[in-house]
Image 1 (tube, one colour):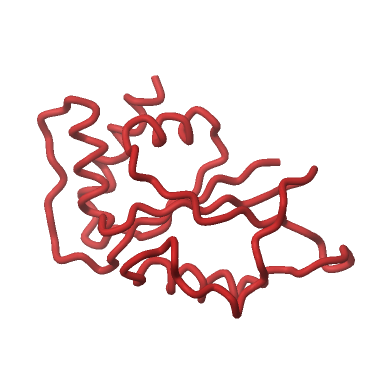
Image 2 (cartoon, helix red, strand yellow; image 1 turned 90 degrees about the vertical axis):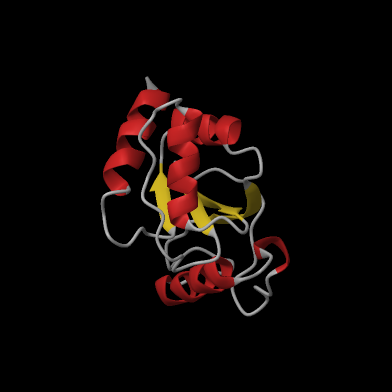
Length: 141
């Protein structure tokens, strides 16, 4: 069922003129399916979501936005310099955001790969890539 949902989503998203370079999910089934069909998906890091009164470094919305831009445009997202942002944190109870990247795979190419993995005859239209990489975020609570 997850594969069919993602195939339908990829087909619809492929019709949009500009594909986003960040996709978020809170579904473990989606995360597992992406791991299966995109074996080159790289884990970048995990950041705990904290309230302002919690101790430890916080990744602000502005920093998150800038970090995502760096990751989407970096030739190698795994070695991108993220030192100016709050460092990834060790897993602990509470909400977290885990970021993954498909290096060298612009969003339109990723959509086509999802469609191909579903053995669907409809390929997403290839356009000029807006980003070098496609980013995925997995939110767990």
